[in-house]
Image (cartoon, rainbow, N blue to C red; front, side):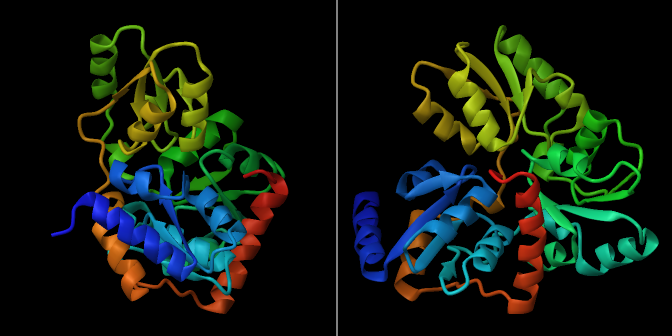
Length: 308
């Protein structure tokens, strides 16, 4: 059986031979993050995939992320180390459900979170991320109703920030963030007095009420890097703790909940990355017409927030 060092060496050799790049989400395991050429959030990884000169992209994340990268990178080969890496939230909104919702609210502007399938994005008017959802919805004329899907917690957060009543919010959620209860956060605050609570907007409203700062994964990384405080309680998926510790020597980071791992995000392993590069599979291929319509929704988001 190969050692971790031998696996890493074989991966490096295959990357060169395949003209490949490895991109990993902030929620991946430490071992996978350390093997990656870049680590980021879902849309950031898609942009990185589009900008790289590499013809092959191994995307260590979940399936909707690989689909988005494939849509933004026609002509490149997009691989995912484990084809079973799905997203519970993305699975909570199907094309049929969104089509029915649009028929019920024909005048509404449809805003979908990037945590959706490409086919769902293709039905939307505009996409959003956790960092720009407020700006995207704010850009819609106040008299136009809005369908916001699929994350109810992000939708309620946006609605509260904007004081906007005319929003129909789909009842989806991220199980990892949904499990992060206010009681867990209160316990963490007692255990780590003085620590700042930093929460992802996918968390429940009562958790966000306890937060000192609310931000996307990129925003969490930036906030913790820039603040002078040394102790932080992190209310999001636990994979981000590795990058926080690596980038902030001398600071301490504590999970807000004892149950903070996404099992799908942990399916990628160094061995699977090696096998993916050896076999050039599993490959994520998207229908051109669906990709075109999804790019339109993503493009509209970038018109509102160019640096998304």
